[in-house]
Image (cartoon, rainbow, N blue to C red; front, side, top):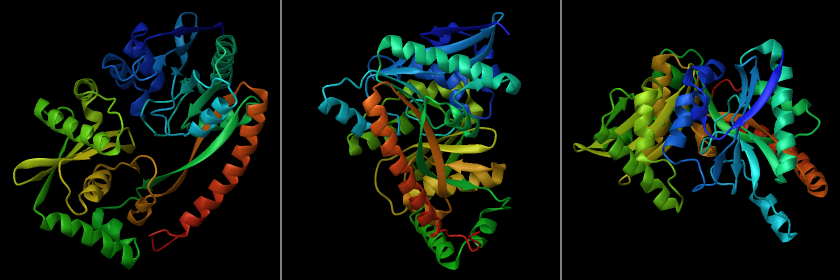
Length: 381
């Protein structure tokens, strides 16, 4: 194998077929259509501090490996929080930004980061990509390189790499135990939790709220106008920044329509809330929610129960509804480990962060064990 590593500043430098041959269709966020839509609609770039700098591995002019990477000038939209690290650097008059990040912007969903199709050559291609990144990091004098929300294979690779430190996180994911319908799912819960969910769903129904679930082919421009208005309203309430434009969602509807699961809630003939999801081959990913007015339990119904029912009805194995939220446990979303890998340039900070991560990991493992004690399922084993 004659490996050559190059970098590109835009995904438009390769074809969709070349890229998707590596990325596959299991995980929607590394597909060409999603990543290029971020570029096309200004969600990445100088304005938001995500500068595209992808690493590609070629063998005899054939693309055989890739690493999506961004030069970051802030920590916004990553969901693996290193603000305290940045503050410590600043207090010591050391520059933390720019840094390098391999992640899907604004998307805290575990998935492949080293895009390598050939399993037999995985180690060799991965080493070539990562070594090239570290050379670039040292030449560019960035503070660090972070690979976030790695899947099992990539986590194993980085955990064995002597240059990287691993960081443990926790999300709440749901698994489909071959449920025949939503009632079958409820039957597996304790009586208390089953009654709670039935009550929450009944309250929504008694408010005369109706639901529509649309894919990208079914959703019209009007639906996307409505959804984006709700999406923006969530950030306005939380003093955040709505980085995804209306045109971004519309582009996804055209380029990956079958991956879209848009849940719309309607009251008295008017849309009042929406929840945007993307699906892969076996997993539903809850991403964005917004509403125009408050209704009791509407958030639980639109973001969780509609999605759970969709997964059961369509044979999806998993539902990842996004970051954080211990309240999800009562609804069947169980604590799930997430991992990220970190390389730090500064030797003293590397040692300090390593010690911090050891303590944090111990605490996180204890936290996950405690959360598992609150399982809503009858059989907690």
